[in-house]
Length: 452
Image (cartoon, rainbow, N blue to C red):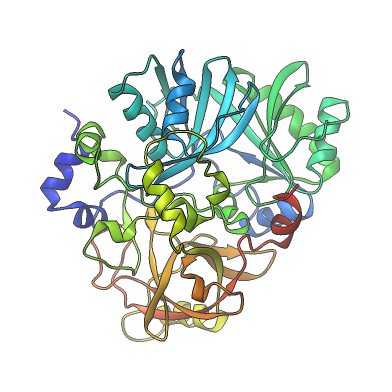
């Protein structure tokens, strides 16, 4: 019998000891780690065109039926006043208390048919509300390759073309001018005689196209892309580089979902399999799980919130909107301190927590303490290296008083006491100095692409 999240939490003595000591290994993207090397692959989405395979690491939740639109409207903070077929948007959900459950990309595929794509946290929540509420909907889940039964292929292929040459490559592939499409706009093309749907998108804040269609047609489309891409310096991107792309666009992929307390939490945790709870890592330590909760505003999602409809958590979110919110920023870590942490591996005594490249996150939910003069200033999320800028950074949510670019802060790296997670070795905590910078860090993403 599958253990429920509620049973697992009771067994561990609470959500925090369970998440802190979860035996889940760090999340990996189940594709080739490197086709060449992750440094060159990172540069490709800035300098030429990158091909990223998204077919295996995301989960699709297909939602259909006469009440599908109503379910999504009542669980999403986004406006659904206009959302026609062949449109897509970032979908954001909160709990009854207005705290973030998560976000994903929502595609309107056909009349009354939608595909919610991304991390499973928000997908689980929407499915739970649909199954336990009064909705005439049907769900079909296509889990990522790590969670899918062995030998069963994905339902869809997904390839992303990203970088300054992506538009020229698309026109070569389709044999026609690509119509101007706004960010998150959708279009349909023909490639090698096959109908392909496209989302205008960019994981690293560069211009890009996410192409998708039936899995059976994926190899044919891939072959066409590779053949046409040679003249545009196409670079295939492996899991290592791809996992770091969000650092440039400032998307936080897996904030801790606010599912452990609140009005529906008991029923939801009894419904949710324990295997999907994840793991908590980092130096921020609190006794109350709610201290780890975020609002959409803490991650810069205020632009997605629309109080033009009724949705779960609306009243509470209106109160959050009126209060002071944290600001999403990029923290540029001092190279001397990062080098000192790495150098400790070669010195006597207990070293600092190992810093991996290009991505140093070692739990599904990475939450590190950010402070100024010993006073808490916010939390640091995803962390890693950007080759194109030659900087080591983390994405963070900090109090407005510390959000001005140039502000000096300290990130505490490592756990004390150390947890029992498999990715945590014997180490000592250290302080790493950092400087606040804008998010997205990429000027192109900040000033050109995301505003187009």
